[in-house]
Image 1 (cartoon, rainbow, N blue to C red):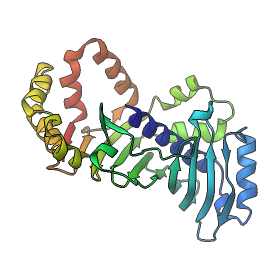
Image 2: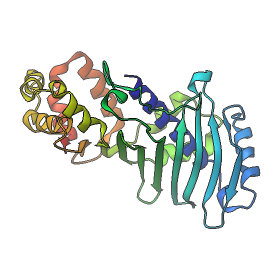
Image 3: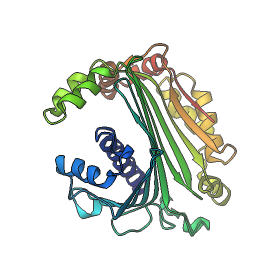
Image 4: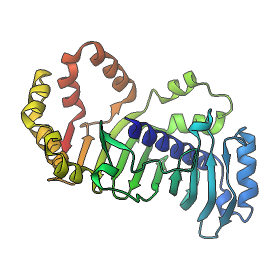
Length: 305
């Protein structure tokens, strides 16, 4: 679906900005914010990819970039952001905190990422549901890293009034090796070396939540025949011998029928799950689907409202 691709690109772009701020030093505490920011961009050969019209720097760690442009490899991959706000920034030898908001995100033509012409399902557009004059997409990112505890937490949110909110959160353990390597060898790291440093990492918890802001409930009222039947859901999941099929399907049907405004998929393994094991499991279930129930139990995956 086009909507999924656009939202995915927005999350990636937001994460790139977050990483740039993270490894860019403590220029948000300086009155030379724009000079230092441009120096960082130049150092990383990103002058043609990240630009802005003006910057405000404040002593309370807050900085506001106005009219930010993120240029991709092709013109159609460009994103525009009306305002990028750094709400909090703290960096020491042991800890790091970054909290930013992106307001008014538009595409390469400065058109809304999600518009009234967007299809929720084939033939069903937001406009056909009577949802028009949609505000621009906003996003927020919060990253916390603590070296003594050897963890990183990342929260990314997308907010689209009248449509949907998406919240993604992940808690990563054993992250010091990778972070130290990136900080010390950022100009020398290849993707293969990054993967090597990341091999010690493990997933503590991960979740993604969708909150309907009007589109799903409206679609359920106007097109009730499109609500997924619970029995069909059960047949599909039970064919794979998935555990908790009834609970999963109950949550799915409630959300798409408008009886519940949120749906969340979470994984909370009893102990941190190694990233290399997760990648290996994913590869295995592609060719051996019968392993899916075992992986679901190990990761303690739940679907709830």
